[in-house]
Image 1 (cartoon, helix red, strand yellow):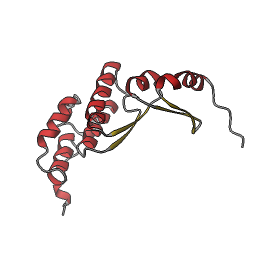
Image 2: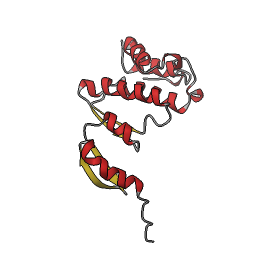
Image 3: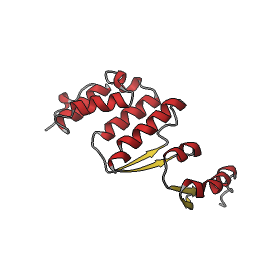
Image 4: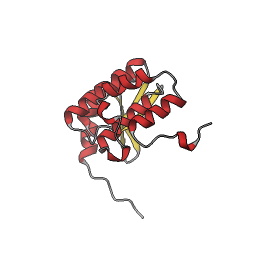
Length: 155
């Protein structure tokens, strides 16, 4: 039974410690390793409310990976990161998640990012499937879809 007084202050380290203590015994080393690999060791003692959007995204990703999920949905995870940090994060996600056989569903409007991470691409246009396949097959249609303004909806 978890008693409210056992819940730590909202610092990343406190949340990670709480998860470690109650849900993942003996995972401290794993937490330290993940925070190092995702460039978040300096975030562990900070209050969650003080984190930037990009820092918060990394903290959420670490928290997610503690559970070693079989599938991960990432929606625009790198949009608030500088290009170098985004590239490192994508590489780490692929190693950490896809590298152990888990599925990664990566939503992005950035075609360069899609090309860098996707083995197959599902292109949506106004909520409908426009194309599915390798990036090289989807690219031309994606360029047209992104260049076309959506038609106004009839009311």
